[in-house]
Image (cartoon, rainbow, N blue to C red; front, side):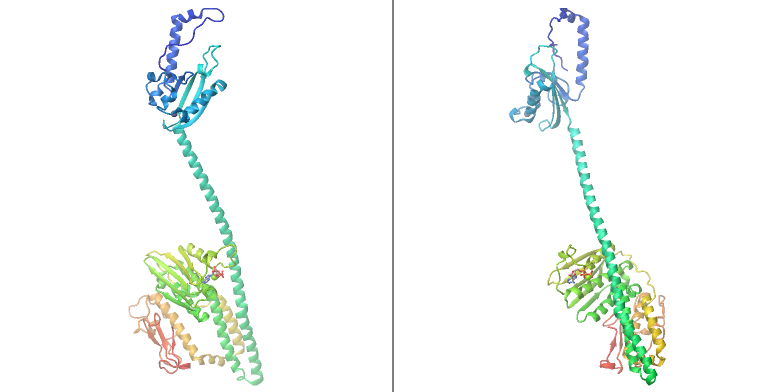
Length: 551
Ligand SMILES: Nc1ncnc2c1ncn2[C@@H]1O[C@H](COP(=O)(O)OP(=O)(O)OP(=O)(O)O)[C@@H](O)[C@H]1O
Ligand SMILES: [Mg+2]
Ligand SMILES: [Zn+2]
């Protein structure tokens, strides 16, 4: 601390010894000087501003920190009011520091010490201020605070404050994040349990649907067939082998219908086409079936993508999206037309199903009041699981658009398709039962009746060609040209190493009336056109003479 002449009051001791004399001794004097210097050095070394103040808050002594705090030189600040030194030109009435100092000062006679913290804008520091009364050591010292001295310690705790504030902010952030994560986890747990309930319900509903369909359609038909065959046996016994002819012909038609029902059930479960040829062929097939079942509602397919361009992993999501969306159109839209389009631009594969129906308000989906209805949420889920983005647009009176887009890599490749065709285990079982029944009762000559339905035979042959051609295209990468014709299905075109035929069990047959099938590639109506002119062998005609085509 800066030098100032010692000011301790010197008086005779109570025991009467002359203390004055003792103090005059050089040894005592030098001891006091040494102690004083040691204390000064110690206080000067402190980073805090330490001042001794008189009763009017004026500085009596100050340590060197006054200079490091840039408040002035140690000698020059003596006698100056502390507030004026800290805040030059400040209006004390308005000043928080001045106010705090006054309060602390007033508290000293009672508590002996006072402490406060404040962010001081003038100094640009956060201050911790401690004020402690300085006892003079003289017993009858004046009781008035104005007559007392006090020591004040000003500590700069700005850095501490900043660190504390940062810590607090980090803490707050952490807590917010934890709260958010807890909420997210809660939501995803709820979603998960809801999904698993939905899944179980969907599975159960599906089982119910299949069981009902088997019972209602296949079961009923088989019972009818059994009944007819029994009647046929009775008729044979009673009236001879020709008697049940008409009945058996009807039964054959019924068997055919049952087969178709089985195929349709199996196809709806999972069409084998999806695995054999790919998503685009399966979608095309589904639209054709849809048009037959739901006419006059018409599904228009605009598929400018080839099976090979669709990654295998997307085949199922694509097919299910088309299936669910078209079923929704049929069930809810009251539409006349549905449009299914698939395109691939650069690396984006887009599937879109829209209709010209009544539309609906998508905001009402998924609410607690929603009845059933997991189709669309299932599609959304399926799209996101397969890496796609799902969007649904609908408005009352303006139809509905379902769109899913997938980013696909340039090196996308379709894996080789499996070559098994057609029948599922379920179909085979039922077919075996039917054949068993038929074989037991019906003489082989009745089977010859099947061949008489030439139109049906021609249709079946065209279907078989269609399928074989699709297989050909999967192997070779194109359809046979018009010149190569359907014969390309039986013998490899010269130099065609990828050819994996023959694709038909027997040589390409003529149509049931003995005319060659007409084959055009690329076709006018389809990828390839296959055509029989019917019984008359001429374009046009009706009944058995009508043209039969693959479009
Ligand atoms: N193309 C559409 N046109 C009009 N309304 C539609 C269409 N698609 C869906 N909706 C409406 O949205 C609802 C939800 O469809 P979603 O497919 O999720 O369920 P759902 O078809 O009722 O039942 P689920 O598909 O589970 O058998 C439908 O009930 C229907 O009201
Ligand atoms: Mg639905
Ligand atoms: Zn001030």
